[in-house]
Image 1 (cartoon, one colour):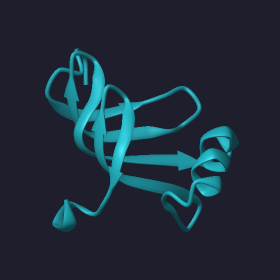
Image 2 (tube, one colour; image 1 turned 30 degrees about the vertical axis):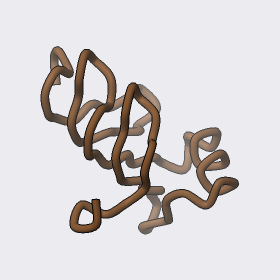
Image 3 (cartoon, one colour; image 1 turned 180 degrees about the horizontal axis):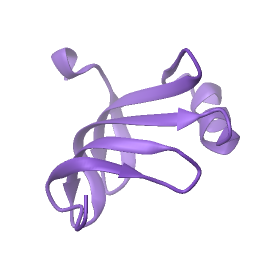
Length: 79
């Protein structure tokens, strides 16, 4: 995603990636955040708050995002 204004995937330098909707360069709408084991800060915070789950070597959080923050955890079919 170049301008992150609609829908697409963005990958951070640490390997984390977000695939979903964007608005004004922020995660906004339904999307899926996938973190690697190397990005322990995100994973520790999510686990502490009982958000997301492990899928092999990746920690996955999906739901509704607004202004780069997860506001509702849900699967696409449940949102």
